[in-house]
Length: 142
Image (tube, rainbow, N blue to C red; front, side, top):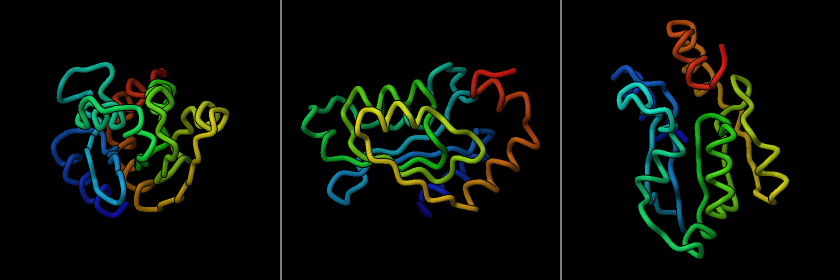
């Protein structure tokens, strides 16, 4: 999680929303992702989607051996992708700022660990304070 947090700080300094994600299989980082909606003018490039895109085409058996680590609770879109590919475990840095669709994951037997990371929370709160409208656009709210 510390690696992702550091990466988010760097990403934040490049005008991005400081949310990061890594896909890990057998202790090895397979792919990394960041929220790139601003940089790419994308409606879907949340950190989890960017990470899965970076992982490339993989088999269902491959994903069943993975854990996805994300600094923020995944939204409905990202939770759906995690469920679609059968990733069995999600580790969440914090879910106080935004509680995504964790219920979708739990209903589909995805194991969730929430770390309640103060670092992740503080970084995102600082971003939201400075970029209120961009944050609400990112989570689909006004």
